[in-house]
Length: 307
Image (cartoon, rainbow, N blue to C red; front, side):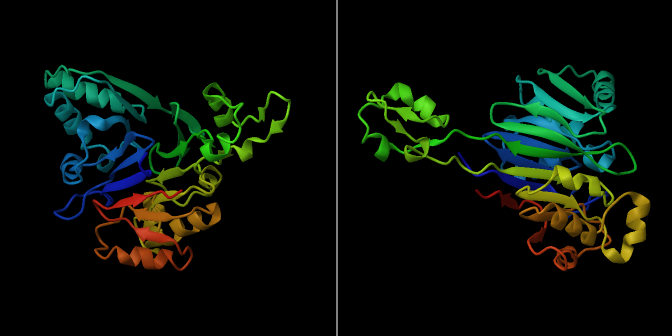
């Protein structure tokens, strides 16, 4: 299984330029590909990143400002034109379904696949998706309109068999492997208990990723993102524009770093940069005054979550 990874497709705010794309990213975790936000140009960036469209089964939209979903109808149309048949799940605030349905109604488009809309409205932490390997939660944020971040957490894996030690115990048969993987001790025919830790290795570390954009500085999210391996937090402005950040419901790089430090995350990625600051390294420099392990996101760059 590949290491979980995050590929940034776009990491700027509002108006696209020839170099800057609005928010969109692909998280690959435990064999699944999750699209998080879908600003204009997402399809082009997916092509450049060589990410297969048909691998995307789950789409998460944080809020209904255009720079976070204006690329979605185009992407859904492309799925249709490419002959997609498997359904796609869209997790988004209430209202997006109506927008999508209205577009396809008036363009007389009947999709060849189904869209399952999971409409979000809760202002509390809420589990919105789960399979055998991953759980996904909303993270209520503080913006001008209803907005959620998303927390992706791996589920614990089974323990790994230590075949070298297992082969030393003739009583252990293949049918016993399942219980060993589940952490159970083994009892020989003579009644001797062999502790599980002698026969297995610890499973891989559970990894987690948190996406927090768009939001003002919002301390309640700290408890939800404690110790995540990778945090993407918006930093639309530098601290010299703190008043503008407050008025528009955004954060500064300094504030994003404060959140990361208080939550004790492993690594911070900054994003949602305002185009008024062409040098994104300035965001990184400001954040490093508070939190050392930080990077300014770059389009088409992939970041790995390490075990």
